[in-house]
Length: 78
Image (tube, rainbow, N blue to C red):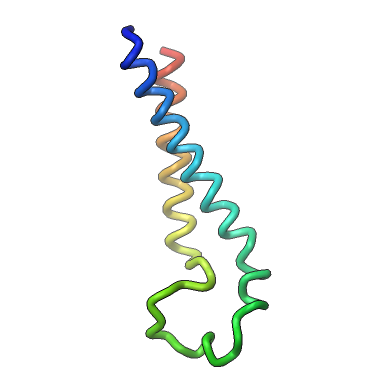
């Protein structure tokens, strides 16, 4: 394999790992983020900015990151 192909595979592993770790950390911080939100902002469902990470989206992205990371590791080892 050439140099650029190897670097591309390693970048796929790194991006998948970063996506996985970032979303797991977002899920872990949900409780502390909820405590810092004022009650008035909790009831505003039309807010454009998320203060607390949505669970379904975070779990989905974490699973996608895990699959990409494992696939990249398998490609590097092959």
